[in-house]
Amino acid sequence: MKISYRNIMLLLTGGILFATTNGYAQEEDVNALRQHAREYMQSGDYSNATLVLTRALEKEPGNIELKNDLLFNYYLGRDFGKAVELGKALTEKPNPDVRSFQLLGMTYKAIEELKECEKLYKAGIKLFPNSGVLFNDYGELQWNRKKLEEAIELWEKGISADPNYSGNYYNAARYYYVSTDKIWALIYGEIFVNLESYSRRTPEIKQLLLDAYKKYFTNMNGLKAPDKGNGFEVEFANLLNKHASTVSGGVTTASLTMLRSKFVIDWYQKDPPRYPFRLFEYQRQLLREGFFEAYNQWIFGAAQDLPAFQAWTQQNHKSYDSFIQFQKGRVYKMPGSQQYRFN
Image (cartoon, rainbow, N blue to C red):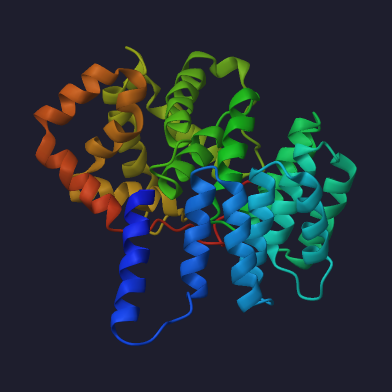
């Protein structure tokens, strides 16, 4: 919850008065200064944020988090000259921080220093080969330069290197949706909404998922067939095709719930399955717990028909509320051993 500036001032004033009445004056804690600066940044007051961060750095000159915050503040305030100067100093120092590379990369993109940006990401990935964020940002750079194949290769590498960083799934799902690929928009999109369930990007990918299922079943002959050498792809597509009649009356939330229920049952007909996969394990868990209909409503309902979704949640508020409570009470994680895209 965002704290108002008035409340911050009351808290700070109260702390000062308390210290005074107890007969001693305490120096402002660096963490408190950092939080104060972030409040200024959130309100768009970048000058005051600079002032506070500079004061904090006087107390702890080696604090890399403060320096990264100052770099981010320069970026937000469009003081790109200072951002580049500080970013270079941070990324070229011994034992740099991955966030410094990310922030300097954002700055280079903003001023369209694309060659310098690419050099930066290559250096960063060499130092941090398991950084999902650097693969993601480098992929976005290549996407914007119309180097689409290089972009998806970087996002796939990011998924392999850091399977629980959501950004690479987000971009890979969007890439595969506009391609002729049959299945990976469906898989990566659903992993994304489980990793990043309540962000501004989540409704976009929920809509993409609904549209991707429509695209799959209405344009099956126009899409690229699964790679015969990739057993996971073949089995996934075969089971969707097996139950295609389920959506013959239309791709809706209700028909997808039925289709996907049959899919999960078939995938685990032999337990353990040939291809263990966390996403399908989670779907099976929801099916067993009685939450699978609510889960499908959560993904597809609002994207298909918002008034109908709202009516469904009102009529089924106990089961939907129970699902949301269940969902928020767990952390979704993808194992690193379940990367089937290039098997």
